[in-house]
Every structure is written in C-alpha cells, then in structure tokens.
Image (cartoon, rainbow, N blue to C red):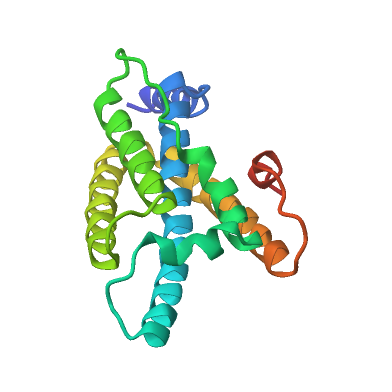
Length: 192
C-alpha cells in the first residue's frame, strides 16, 4: 500500500499538470463569451428600459418600439456597447470529435442569439422583453449544462477571464461617458 501511494500521487499530478486539450480551450472560450455577453446584454437592456420609461413618461404611451433606442445606439455609450458585443456575434466552431460538442455548440448559439436580439431589438417593448427573457433562459440552460460537467480548473479560469472582460467593459463605458473615443474591440479584449 505504501508503495502505491507515491505512484498514484505522481500519476494524478501528471494528469493535473497536463496541457489543456483543444476541447478545454474551446469550452473555456465559450463559457467566457457567454458570461461576458450576458453581463453586457443585461447592461444594454437596462439602458433600453430607462430610455423606454422616459419615452413613456413623455408620450404617455406604453407601446414604444426599437425607434426609441436610435439616439442611444448612435451615442458614445451605445457604440461602445455595440463594439464590445460584436465580438460575440459569431458562433465558435467546435469539432464533432469533442465529447461535449453538442453542449458547446448549444451555448455558443444561445450566446449569438441573445447578443443579436439585444443589438437589434424588434417589435413592441413588451414583445422585445418576452423575446429577451426567452433567449436569456436558453442561454442560462445551455450555460448550466456545460458548466455542470466542466473541469474545475476551466470553471475557475472562466470566472477569472470573465471578470477581466467585465473590467474592460466597465472601462469602455467610463470612457464613453467621459467623451473619450471608445477603444476598438481588440483593445477591450486585452486584459490587465
């Protein structure tokens, strides 16, 4: 028994220190994209809600639609948010040989769907809210499914990278509010 212990520990250490696989890298990227996009879309829909509420107060109508957001979309903040979210408009490709390619693909597609809808709202405010809620629910389900079986070090890395993306997004918003030209998506993706 005592001789098996060091051998077992050594083999566990080698497995733990092994280089990440391509599937691990893609899983990490999809998780980070989903979390970062969800957070930025939450900010954007909050801003849409503020604009809608203001328009309702001025016009006295609750109908409203995407035209209410045209001025915001052209503002420094609107352009910064669009620049940040545009990174998430393309699904991440996965290889069929990945054990979890279906879950990775589902999360990637749900992220693209949520971002696309948030950047191009359509219909009435109420219909948009329902569509956003349904898209957010699909993203949350796909996120939970992928996170459930993910390796713990991937989950830890995804949280760290998501926080870095959140800080970059906050800096972009602060610069936009201060009237500073918003950085490009490449600069926003850089981490400190």
